[in-house]
Length: 140
Image 1 (cartoon, rainbow, N blue to C red):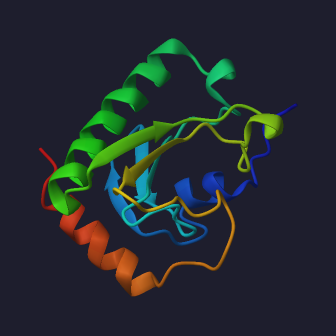
Image 2 (cartoon, one colour):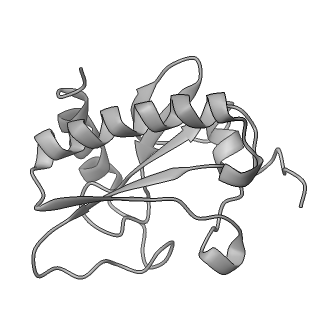
């Protein structure tokens, strides 16, 4: 499989389509998942164009994981879930739906099942904006 520069996340990196940003630096972008599996579901992507973890340089993976940890800590402090799940899928059979490396930060709440990955109705944009603002307040 070759990288598609017109995938959804590549367009977000280039600013061609909007997203609810949580964090951005020269190498990384983090934003709220528009189809959250739980309240506070956040994504972290490298800006470098790579399909998945298996095709990405170690340095980019390391940078992205450090930011994933930083964002996960801010999610934890902001919304105080009972747990945090970090997920990353490689290829369609594993559940990958956007073929640009990305990490899911999924808050877990006791007794609450996860919504279906990548499905259902989109979240309310204002609610996502409010959550992103709370998370940003807790970034180191």
